[in-house]
Length: 382
Image 1 (cartoon, helix red, strand yellow):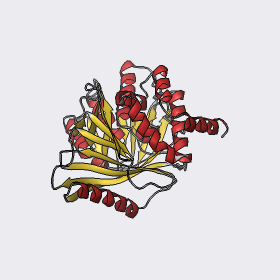
Image 2 (cartoon, one colour):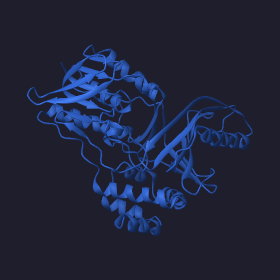
Image 3 (cartoon, one colour):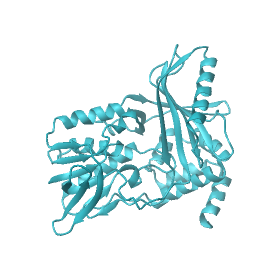
């Protein structure tokens, strides 16, 4: 029997283990169950925060200025109290594995959790695995999809693909990111932009991202990616080498997620709704979710599920997703205007749901009214 069974060692599982091993619970017995415990190696996570937030997570890159471009109008927006950070999956996995290596009470088994059952008499959780029998735990946290009966599929996605690129001469300011470059080919039913994270003046992660109802093929993305790189190379009279690739798919939806499976089992990460529906960011919130559960365990008593998003932020997400689905051509100038008229610190705090109603009213007052009124009409009468 163990104190905690953790199913899944992707982003949410790593966040949970990092927070646990940096807490008074670090001596508890932990069993991690994952058929592919190195799955996070190919991921890249970004988040923004104050310098003292998630300070124990070793970041690979950090920036203090963001850029947004549309119709050759470049917005260069320095951050004031926040910074924007990037954590490579390999780096974070290696950090957490190093933390785990000093704790013999932590055991990781390469296996699949087939079923989870709560024993009401013993007040324990029984996790059935494919090759290691039944693991009994006081608590269970899972970032894996256990409910096979849930066949729901989203109707809108954030899809991205690109890679790490090294140019033959300096072309970037390594203190600045291109958060959204909308000056890429657009289509009627989606929003496309390029995203650039410089690692140095000549090296960067560059991705082409789409908010789209229809999934693109790898060939389609590769063409868009190479066209963008060729344009950069031509503009700076240089050449480049692609030395690693990356792609991903994030559902964009505001449906409720099941955060508690039984009195002692809770979901984590994507399957728990930690991905912000309108942006796709999740790293910061996954750590906050882990901190929430560990704090409850330390306090004693019964655990409650991580709180749902405040209804007003769900409402904002619904409106923006409606615009992206029904009026995608209008969404681009909205994003550009948002970063032009509102300080980026305020925008980022809003996007991580950390603003007051007064601040949110001020943000919407600086945006075009018509698209949101149309979205509101569709929201009310859908």
